[in-house]
Image (cartoon, rainbow, N blue to C red):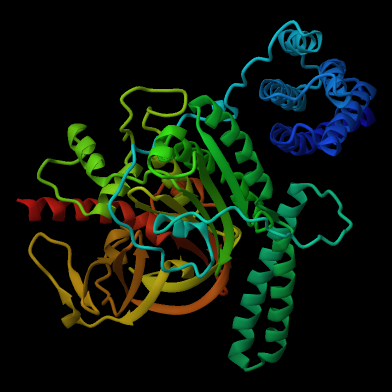
Length: 578
């Protein structure tokens, strides 16, 4: 093949992948509205075009398989066959197979695939000789996840979001489904650009920002700041524009959930109404790509563990169709995604009982309701007695928590007996630029994410209470919080410098203080990946170059202290129980 033919084939594969995502949604809509002629015509046109184009670029197997699907769609279009659930299942399997073939062809343009059985199934349906096969759950490629058998007693509503949201269902009831009017989008010309080029652009802009900081620092000594500040404003505008090129809507990530919900609900014989809100909300492409697995885990658990069967819901006075709502919105420098269900809720007592039986916590340990609920994030924890295709292996919610925290985010959960559960994911809008605080601790200049610091206070010696063998603590507005010292816990050589400042950090409703020497200033920093030497060191988010041209580590305070905080809280509970 010459270069032109290779480029032509790869262009086809990229365009076909994008079309397949839209077509999967169309198949799911067809299942709900099998008489929609406009929808059927659109799906048929897609199959016809895919067949012709794939044959034109030399992908004969895709063309032949699509030809069989086109024949079935023509029968539906001519109203000779009705689009039943089982037929839609076969069309979804066709969609999956074409996606699998595209994946393979992107690796090897000469790849060959086994499509015989699926083509026979399509032909048999047209001939009326066989029923369509039942679709395998779309998320089968993901390791099944686990939450818990759920019920719970009480819940506090989230304080942060000031948004009208179905998350209130955890306290009250989910609202009736409403038609949301979407503003018509203005057509805008688009140009497909290589992601590698965007990465290069962002790196260059990052270097520009660093040089601007160096220039401003140098000019500051001579008092000539006006030009530097003008340059700084220009750099900031360019930076904002370049970063916006990385932003993508969360819609595609959300739309994939429709297939997950459809296949999982059929597998479990449950009825589910999936509501997607805020699909146009934008997030960094890298963050969006890492969002898939956590969302799949939570959604499948919501259906398996959270929602009751139709009979159980009717007995509980609920509609037989359960509701799962996924909502996205911006809050400060974070993207918030809330996944809410109107199921049974999480039973903290059952979790404690199971955790004790598994030896995860000692019999003497007493936990609050919220602490009990958060046991679902413990690695290997499951209340399922029998491992199923959907859950029971104990490899779910701990993966969710780990993945989100690796992105610099946070996971919160609330639940109420009989009303349901709400998971709240807080994610940074971008991983390339952060608002940072340049601090001094242990003789080093370090950067911490500004978004992790709730407040900063002057630290006096009489504010700290020290007990033998216990973590120092302080009384902050009548709340006892533990105190950590970054100089000690970071593992650098102790300098004996006095901790004059306390940064207050809040994580999972637990606050703690971090003592540091000083805060130098606040500034935006360009996040560079950590080097091999510090890649696996806990608490390192990345590196950056400061205004004076020197490198600095970016410390993830939550990642550095969350595990230690949990361990010490558990130890305190054991001591109190004793």
